[in-house]
Amino acid sequence: MVLPACGAVALTLVGCGGGGDGAGNGSGGGNSNGNGKGGKFAYVTNGVDPFWNIAEAGALQAGKDLGVQVDVLMPANGAPEQQNMLEDLVTRGTTGIAVSPIDAANQVELLNGIAERATLITHDSDAPQSKREVFIGVDNYVAGRMCGRLVKEALPDGGKVMILVGRMEQDNARLRRQGVIDELMDRSEDSSRFDPPGEAIKGDRFTVLGTLTDNFDRAKAKANAEDTLSRYPDVDGMVGLFAYNPPLVLEALSGAGKLKLVKVIGFDEADATLQGIKDGTVHGTVVQNPYMYGYK
Image 1 (cartoon, rainbow, N blue to C red):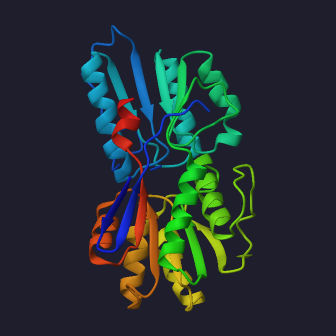
Image 2 (image 1 turned 30 degrees about the vertical axis):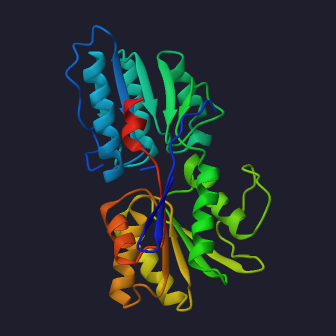
């Protein structure tokens, strides 16, 4: 679905496949009021972000509708904390666990161990090599290519673009980034392709200057945007792949007096991003349906 708004667009993706990003605290979010007789379930995110507040609401509502206990946990300190949460959940006899893996490639053994003791599914970001039952989420490579098309709309003559994202270890981050790059380079579709993040990538019309990560550190994310503006004063576009990236890019642009001079393209529906679309400071964003991620 394409929603025009003041010359910009929000592209909406909803998905569920077999084969993203809630204020909360590091020890967990909320829980439903089920008595646990129908099983105990847990919804584990990959970090703390307002995106996950929406997903949490969906998960807790599902627990109420089904009359089962649902706990929502949000690791604030990366993969080690997420691992501790998962191990504690199975120790406590949790029946089913939905997790957005932080470092899928290095968590396969952990996830397979969890899958032997509980029903395991992934959401938002997949771990396709694990024994999870199903993945609930969008095709992040396709979503990345959609984001790339927004960049092309914003910069029809091409230009220099910087990509900003939380962490490259996540499957969704890698796929989104590659989708953006492949679209800008006019390549064929190949989700297994991987361009090293430390190198500039030059095509006929676009140059991807680099990929800057922040490990979910908001101060670092804003600093990355500020450093980009300082280091590349001729940058034409900035692409934020996690929900909090576009709002922090806007803050950096505002501080530098470059709002509307540098095109901003993002992911997800942070309030500041949607307001930016209305104001004309954000060209567009690719949004998901985090509530249904949690509910399903």
